[in-house]
Length: 222
Ligand code: PMT
Image 1 (tube, rainbow, N blue to C red):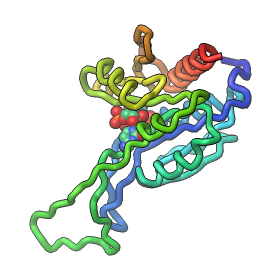
Image 2 (image 1 turned 135 degrees about the vertical axis):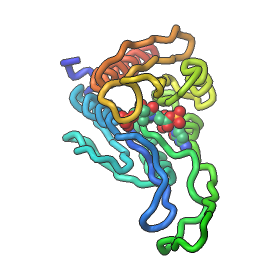
Image 3 (image 1 turned 180 degrees about the vertical axis):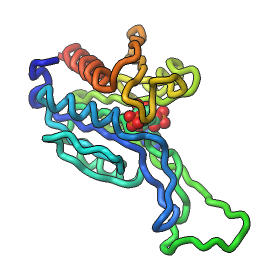
Image 4 (image 1 turned 90 degrees about the horizontal axis):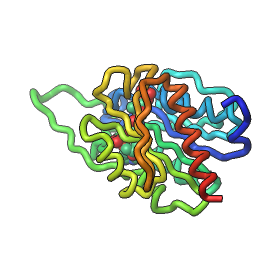
């Protein structure tokens, strides 16, 4: 890992959990801390890549030398990622994108007048699937899959459905895996390849294993 084996490769990483506004002071979100995505960005930079980090709000300091684009919602992330996509060779979608957003985002703070209230939700666009549709022959697309059961089967389905080249599957119910912690337990799921199950590792080491896999996919295309 020490050499500059990703020199000049243009990589876009997404990180963190999107925030879906209910009103000016409230939102729906998830447990993503951004650690997995920030480690990927940091390690890619260290290996010589040119990294654009599209980050939802997280409490982390951005790694040096990345181009940081801050976003709030899934729609913001969708727009930012698709605007950057034409100049990018590798996309890694480590962000936990909210599947739904409130239909209405109130302009004023909602008052507590009723005992019960309902928030109606509408599906967000699937960023990874849209990237998969626009993918060119030169691009390598990597998605994550946060699963609670049938991890590898679901990951394989995502790989094909979203036209990705690699899915990094984490069973987020396992201790030491998934959201917020500093370690992860992942399986690397590729087309026409046996699944590679990795042991528990630091998110930094997982990041390097994912970057190694990306280089191997790129080498195969040459
Ligand atoms: O941030 P950390 O605290 O370090 O936690 C890391 C993590 C658990 C968030 C990360 O390892 C991870 O699994 N990220 C993906 C979480 C997720 O949203 O999984 P999913 O199975 O719902 O989505 C599958 C893939 O589609 C993901 O690459 C996701 O970015 C993408 N997606 C999902 C929905 C959507 N509307 N657009 C998308 O692009």
